[in-house]
Amino acid sequence: MDQLLQHLLNGLLLGATYSLLGIGLTLVFGLMNVVNFAHGEFYTLGAYAAFAALSLASVHFFLAIPLAIAAGALAGAVCERCLLRPLRGQSIDTVMLVMIGVWITMQNAELLGWGGVAKSVATPFPTEPLVLGPVSVAPLRVFVFVVSGGLILGAHLLLARTKLGRAMRATFQDRETAALMGVSIERIHTVTFAFGAGLAAAAGALLGPVFLLYPSMGDLASLKAFSVVILGGLGNFAGAALGGVVLGVAEELGAGYVSSGYRDAVGFLMIVAVLLLRPSGLFARAERVG
Amino acid sequence: MSRAALLLALATAATAPAWVWNPYHLHTLIMAGIFAVLALSLNLLLGYTGQLSLGHAAFFGIGAYASGLTTVKLEWSPWIGLLAAVVLPGAAGYVIGRLALKLRGAYFVLLTISFAGCVSLVSVNWMDLTNGPLGLPGVPPLEIALPGVAALSLRTKAAFYYVVLAAVALSYLVCLALIRSRVGRALVALRENETLAASVGIDGTHYLVLAAVVSAAMAGFGCGLYAHYTRFVSPEVFLFTYTVTMVIMVVAGGKGTLAGPVVGAVLFTVLPEALRAATSWQWQMLLYGVLLVAVLFFMPEGIVPAARRRWSAS
Image (tube, rainbow over all chains, first blue to last red; front, side, top):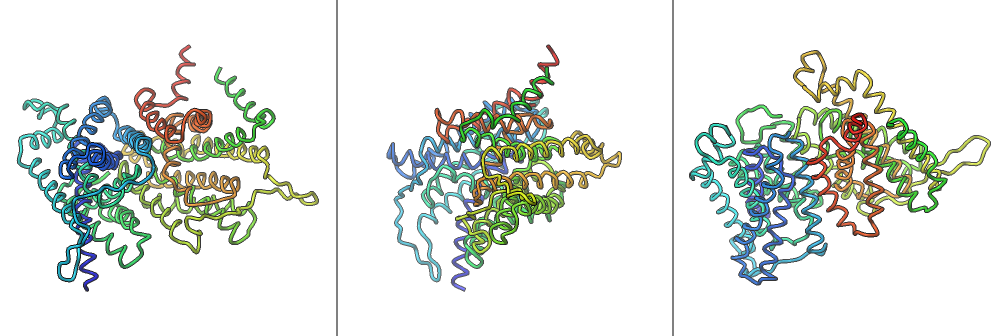
C-alpha cells in the first residue's frame, strides 16, 4: 500500500512536467497546425541555457529558469520567423519534414557545442528527502511540481483571459476575420510558436537538475510530449494537462510493477492504443481525425 | 542525354570493383547499395502513397534480427536467413499497415515512431532472444554452394558488391513493376486525392497495406544483406539516425521517382565519406539537418525531377 502511494506520488510529480511539455506542443499543433518535431530540442535548449546561466554566468538558480524560458522563446521566434513563415500555405507534411531538419540540426549543434558527456546541474535545494507519513519526496521535485503547475495555470489564463490569448485563438479559427478585426496575423504566429517553445524550455530548465543534461535528451522529451498530446487529443489544452499526469502515473506504475527496462514503452503503447481506439484523445468529445 | 547518362551510370556501377582498389571505397559503395534498397523501400510509402513512415527502422531492424537469429541461433543457411529477413518484416508490415493506415498525416507518423520504439526496446530488453545491447556476433557470410564444385564464398568485398548490385536492381525492378501496374496507378490516385480515388472504387486501405508490405519486406531484405555483410546485428540498427538518413535520401533524391532514391542513396553515402577527412560525424549530422531544410526550401521536388526538367528544357 505504501509502495503504491509512493508510486502514485512520483507519477504525479513526474506527470506535471509531462503536462508542461505537452501543452506547448498541443498549442502549436492545435493553433498553428504545425507538427513540431523540434519540440524536444527547445526543451534541451532550455536545460542547457539554465546550465550555462548557472555555471558560466553564475546567476542564482531561481533567475536561471526565467532566463532559460526567454532563450527558448527567442529561439522559437527566430525559427518561426525564418523557417515557418516562408512555408505558410505549404502542406503539413512539408512543414513536418522541415521541423525534422530543425530537430537534427539543433541536436547536433548542441552535441558540438557541449560535447556528448552528460552534465549535472547543482541546485540550492537539500538532497535530504521530505518524509510525509508513508511517502517521501525530494524537495527539488516539489519545487518542480509547483512551478510546472504555476506555468500551466499561467498559460491557461493567458489563453483564456487576456487580449493576446483571444487574438491567438481568433487567428487560428479564422485568419481573415481576425485580420479584419485588426489582429496582426504574422505577429500572432510568431508569438504562438515562441510561447510553445518557451514552455518546452521551461520544462527543460526544471527537469535538467532532476535528471542529467545530454544533447539527445530532447528525443525522449519529444516522445513524452507527443504521447501526452495524443492522450489528451491534439490541440486540447486541458486534455494535455490531464494526459501528462496520466502518462506520469502509468509510467511509474509500469516501471514499479512490470519492468523498469520497459518504462519508455508505456508512452509508445499508449500512443498506439489511443490512436487506434480513441483517436481524438481520452478526454475529447467524438470528432473525426485524419 | 538522359539515356547516355543512364548507360554511363550502369557501366560505372557494373565495373566498379575493377577500378576501385581501395577496400574502404568499395565498402562505401556497398553501403550505398544497401541504402539504395532501403531508400527505394521508403520511397514506396513516402513517394507513392504520400505517407511518411518514421518507423521504417523497425522493419529493417526486424529484418536484420530475423536473418541474424535464424543463422546464429538455429544455424540455418544464410539464404534461408535472408528469406526470413524478407518474410518477417513483410508480415510485420501487414499487421502495422492494417492498424496504422487507418490514420493519415501526423497520426500515421506518430504511430510508426511508436511502433519502432517498442520493437527497439524489445531488442534491448529481451536478453534471452536478442542478447540485448551486446548484439549477435558471428552472422555467417553468404555462400553459393554449387553441386560438384567447392562452395563459393561471397565474403570478399568485390563479390559482395555484386550481390548488393543485384539486390538494388531487383528492388528497382520490383518497384518499377509495382508502379507501372494497376496497384501503382491506384497508389498515385490515392496520394493525389483520396476521396476521388475512393469514389471510383479504389479500396484505399487495401492498396496502402499492399504498399506497406512490399516496402517493409524490401527494407528487411536490405538490412538482411547488411547483417550478412557486417556479420553482426545489434540494437543499433534501430537508431533513429538511419531512418532520418533514409528520409533525406528519398526527399533530396526526389520522392515519387524511381531514380531519386538511388541517386539520393549514392550521394548521401559517398558524400559524407568524402567529407569525413574534413569534418567530424557531428558536423555531418548537422549538415544533414541543414541540407534537409535547404532541399525542402529550394528544391522541394528533389534532385532527379529538377535535373530532368533542366534537360528537357534545354
